[in-house]
Every structure is written in C-alpha cells, then in structure tokens.
Length: 256
Image (cartoon, rainbow, N blue to C red; front, side, top):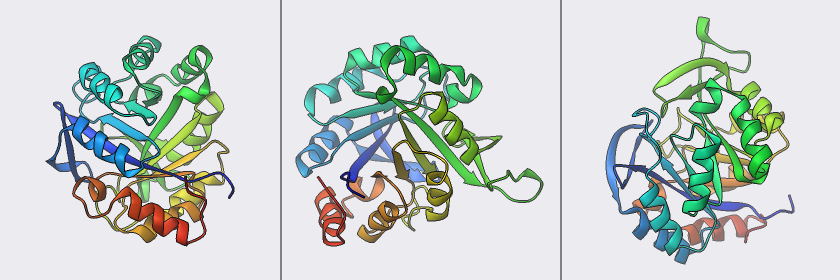
C-alpha cells in the first residue's frame, strides 16, 4: 500500500444538526455541522463526508444552505450525499461547494444514473454509498450481504458485493461501504465484508460503520480500505483524527 490512507469524519445531518445513533436508530444530537467541520479541518481530517440521513426517507433534496455554509468554512474536500436523485441535483451540490457527491437510494432505483453522473462530471466526483447488512436463511444473497436504502430502513434483496462491483463498472469513482450491522456500535469495521468487496472492485474503497478505537482503523486499512470513515468516536471526542493518524502511522501505514 503506497497511497496514503485517508481519515474521514462523517457528519450525519438531520434538520440542520449533526446526529448519531446505533444502526441508524436512537439518533442523538452531536452538534452544529459547521462547528464540527471546523474542528475536523483543524485536527487534520483528509476529507469530510456530509450525509443528510433523512433526505431520501422524507423525499426531499439535501439541505443546500448547510452544505454551502460548511463548504465556505473548511478547506478539505467535502463529499455530500442524501436525497440525490438526478444529474441536476449533483450540479446544484457541486455549485454549493461539494467536491464529490454520494448516491445511494436513487441509483438502486435507476442504476443508469451512475453512468449519467460520471459522464457529465467525471467519475472522480461520484461516490456510490452502499449501506449493507448481513442476511441469512431464505432472504440471503450470494455474498451474504444485502443492500439497504432509506438510511437502512428498507431491504432490497440486492447482493451488496455484486452491487458494489456493478456500481464501479457503471462509473462510481469510489465505494463508500457502510456496515449497517456495525454502524454506531464501536465494535470494529466488518472486515469480512471489506475483504469480499475489495476482491471484486478496483476503485478506492471507504470503510464505514463500527469504528471504536484506533486499531479498528488500522485493521480496515490492512484489509484493503483506501479510506476510513467514522462519526460518533469523533463527534463525542472518544478519539481525535490526530490520534487515529498517529496510531496508523506507528503501524507503518502511509498517512497524510
């Protein structure tokens, strides 16, 4: 591994505030998005990811005002997702200050959206967000992982590993792989799922869901993650970006 591993705080936003729960349930307030973005910028975050977690479920666009305020105040790349349904939505977000745009629910409904976005803006702009959970029994998929939508509220029956591979083929420049089972639990990333997706896709892979201690980030990078993303451990000051980077650097990983 020669390319530096990126450390990315994630701001899950609902009603203009950063929120965090466990498995997307029991959300509690974690602060103002612009204030948190400032803090992470100062701590040395490589990027920020801003997800409007209720946009798809409420069938509305991402809150542009919060995006533009955040983009004006920080100087690291900003990925924005939530409620993105059309090429025009992407255009508006980029004009509001986003550097990359995350797509999830709308791409499952209409996969050609990925190709349309990549063709117009370049695949470097497009992040396919895959919210995946383990499934067993009659509802199981070939890989054992299923894609969910609407902030993890709805199962799709779509195999998550196959979908990640297809998304990259259609034009996604990165895959944000979020384990819905591990999300907010601080028990560690789903390394088995990371391995399975890494074996099938050659675009950058962002590990998400489950970070609780510095070693978890290091493990994810060793299992093929090009970037590691976390929310609650940063928001509630369990860890700082600097502590995570120091641990990964001490483990011999290339860090910015």
